Length: 603
Image (cartoon, rainbow, N blue to C red; front, top):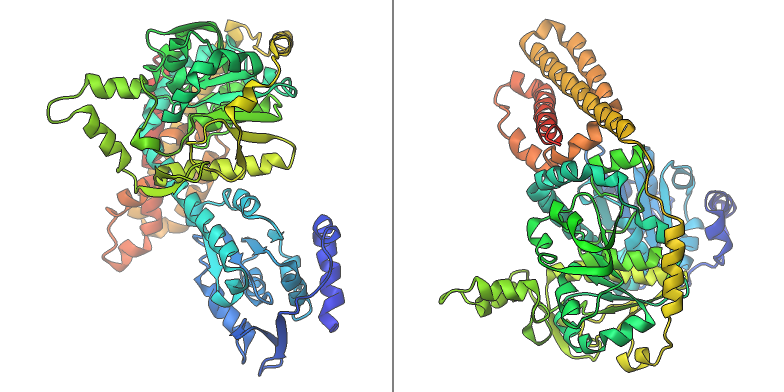
């Protein structure tokens, strides 16, 4: 071992003690270290050189020049060879978050023997992922915004485990697709979410939160009912399933359940759109508990059921008022109501979660269970040239269809949207297994998902009845009711405080527009104007209403499109572009606050 080994190993143990304790310090026999022309170490793996034969450091400096600190916050290295790339990036970008991924820890220890890792281990934000499975890696990188992340990949650094790194690349692509969908959704529905939340604010003081059920269902199997076509085979057995489990039914499957004269224990609705509220229209389920949030369409909160409970809002206005009253309990949002239903079962502490009808595909070329609101709407709105079958075909082929496998090994048509949901379940269910929570599918016709095992309906029906445990669960939750006892006067005071915060933010935005205008008009006072703009930016960041206003603030994509109208022809226009852009931000902020106040003042 050379002079780098002991120093690097000590720094590794100091920075990552838990990781160091779980790994054996063995180097890789597949890596052959060689001396480069400049005296540094390089390495060969098979016929591939990991770094330059002449000057590995200069090669690494060139590599990391593509990292733009004004745009990128994260640097992900898929493999890293001997570490020259991460070291160069750490030296040049002290504020960046560096994520190093390597499946073979022996290669990592070989790297510690080849060069000085001090810049890496001393870097402020460093994440080292060794010997992790793809799902664990995906869980980490899912927290990185795609447009703020630079991925470094060299063929020589990934060739030894190509399938592993390709799977991680797929996870990065899926993360990017998820962000795009989230952005599209925000741009389309932000005003609806704001309007619904404002109309429903008072329910925060009237309804309990889901957290009153936390950890109470450790001995209770939960069954999630989704509305895929395969649910049809489960429906005749619902009454027996209910005796053996806690049933959580997504809103789209409720109609089918009630047709079987079975009221689910819980119903969950997460979509705030009007059409989603129609899944409950003209229905009632007196023994069921409805789970939703205050951004739901208002009629949902008037649904006739035993009780309505809320989960913590995903949107800023709800989060503000929960922070002043009582947090309801968070549920994950993976893009589908079924993801939230699964997370509710997990929150309850269930160790065995069963899912039925979550097909994430189109078994038999069908899109939804028969009799669902989707199917009935397709029939009721059909015409001679646009019938229900046409609607079905459009759904099947509207999002990049592909063929995958169900639990029986048979082909199933799926698409890009479904792959995002399956990725979410694969990641979450695999991670849940590590803490003893198993997830199963009761419908073998569904898309096969890693982390979710098939479980036969016959075996499930042989389980013992648990109605006493279910009663005890509900009784225990009732005794720990978390509904806030805040008075109407105090709650009105919180509303006034929020309105005052909006007024303050509106005033700051106006001052920003004024200061930016002066900076553009008077070149002689540019320094003073820039200082004033910095003060205003600081005030905005400190505002208690900024997060709420962000709901209807343009997305980054929308801002970039609007910014194209800012002239950049002359040298002076180019010089003042940052100020013009700041003025644009203030104008959009002012418009957002005014829109927010318009909705908020109505209720």
